[in-house]
Image 1: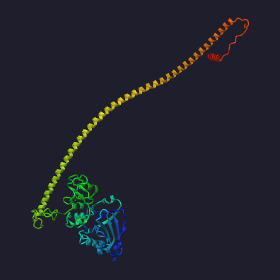
Image 2: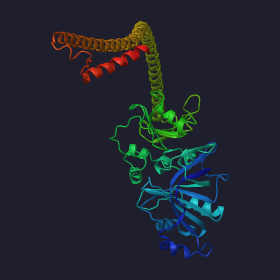
Image 3: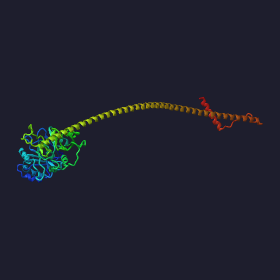
Image 4: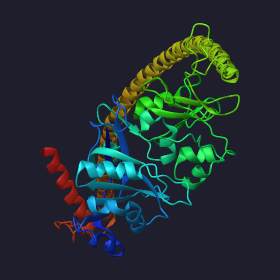
Length: 480
């Protein structure tokens, strides 16, 4: 049972060359107007993991999905390829994928289950063109979902497993897994079928086709024991190296991976190869993986396996090689574990050394910081003391400045008073001199009778009056 999820942001549109195929549809009397639509998107194909994918009555439906149609086949050519079955078709959707320029897919709805069965058994496995190698692969689909979110489209539903949409990768799988009746072609790089389908769109086919490349793991870069995912083309190393292929399966649920050396596909869910056939190491012919005689002697002469010594030798060589590989991988695994153990011990010792060094450095830095802090505190105290002394000195300076100013004013006042006293005394001395001279003059005069009884009047002077005025003012201040 298959379901489809299409990651698409577009809507269904009428087919652009619908007029070209109108001739093939108008001639049908039972279904004269089938719907032809087209849409762009990325198709994700899922199958139910618990059942076989080969068609059975419970898995059939009226909806068919053509996995891959080569791009050189136009829509009209595909309608001609369908032939008379077109009269039972009610709906055809051509899905164009931007990432797959070499092919497209077709979703078909038929009127009845019998018509769908006839379409499937008539065209499944048929060449699209007699001159080309591409085959038509058809699957019965149970449902189709469209979403604009890539995360939803790429997430498998519960109980389902995603399959590749590349026809070559589907043919590499076992028919029970892919639902496609594969041929015995091994799809090596010399095959024309691979070169026909591969236009650098499928990563798996590109690695198988271009043998000159040297692929490496996408994560660690290892070039040994490589596996490539059939769904998305992720290149990862096996579980005996770093196990990036297994991690990719756990992260994305892409359970099918192709080993590049053996070209065999591993199913991570089933934990085994998906092939029932493998190529003999003797002649390269396909043989069953479990093909051996079941009799006790090993030669029953009835099954045909006991007589083929070449196949038995190939199986024995394969077993020896498998055992050798298993022990080699086991030894490599144990050596890797020992290496990791010693590396962990070295890392632990290095970590302890780093911790010791860090503790010593931290202790030394802490001690140095404490010393510096104590010195800083001491300097701060001295600074505060000096600041206090400076404030006191400034205050004393202001007080003394006021006192000096008062003393200067007092001395200036006293000096002025002294000057005034000196002037006053000088005036008194002058007055005495004048008086004495006047007396002497009067004494020396002969005609003393004429001036007897007279009054001596001093001559008023400006300086004298001003001096007297000042004297009166001083006397007034003293009284006050």
